[in-house]
Length: 456
Image (cartoon, rainbow, N blue to C red; front, side, top):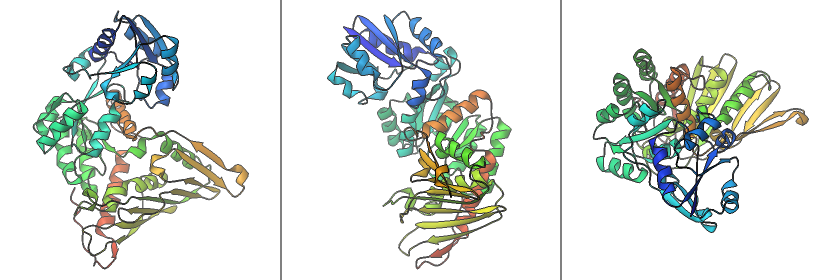
């Protein structure tokens, strides 16, 4: 029986070896496809640190492999299976169901994820595999674990949730090594933590993690006050750990390219940034007081565009919110922000739907990014003379969480304490705007003006 498997095999470790051993045991001839750097990039695999030749050597040095091939493009697996007379395609269970289409060509076997190989062992063997714990067991945490498999050099090991049964089910479903009984126990077992808990818990949890010397990737908004966000960044700096707010758009290649084109002067001097993000929801944290509402849930994204293009020096702002009597939170808001050289408009909605576009107006032309601009894959520069118009395309992979994780892991590896893609100063500025917008809004919709608690 001829067996084939594929992988990047970066920072080769015991988990890789065990997968190859189980694949080898399925037949008498094992073929391994090692992905090229270019193909890894096109499929959204990030942070690969070793060259193709080093990774091929990783595989051949095991003595388990009869033949090594190079995987260079999407769709190659079908051709390889036919060309090499393959009987069994084997791959890790992290990819369960992803390769069922190959059942038309051979038997497909999903090998159970290697358990019992701790991140401590991997770090000792292989240049520092970063162990990560997840705090929270909701939708975004599930997406984070799935996205982490596209980032080389990281291993999501454990989960903690205030509700123990939720954490236990989460660990079983996503094949994590362990469940922590407390947040303190989680911090004791990992080098870094991803916080995907409710907004009002972030401040205390970040403080605990920083005090324990654990790096933190915290879901947005980090807090809902400028003072608390500033304090957390200062504490992280003093402790020598990385603290990064997980605002995924900031780290995506398409948005980075859009900012570069806009700031390059291609459309002249920027005078206006108009960004909208709305979604209709019927329940959940978005509609729960006091932390819910469209501003706290969504405004970080349009404010990111404003801060990236105008900087952190806004001069004034005004907020108007639609807050119907029957709703515990505001459902639609517009934040108008003045800068020395122009202005920005940020619209958000969890009960009102609008076109989610981004328009950047300049003295020579403008940039248009269609909905959903925060998952930037495409934008245009447009001019009075339409012959000058230009279209830009950049793939946005998966849910985009891999981009923030790759940046986070890279900062830890390189000893950097800030990222130019999303700086501490920008995070603090956005927190200040969120705080002011929530507390000072002019309210419409049959509800009198109220002061909103903005405790983080």
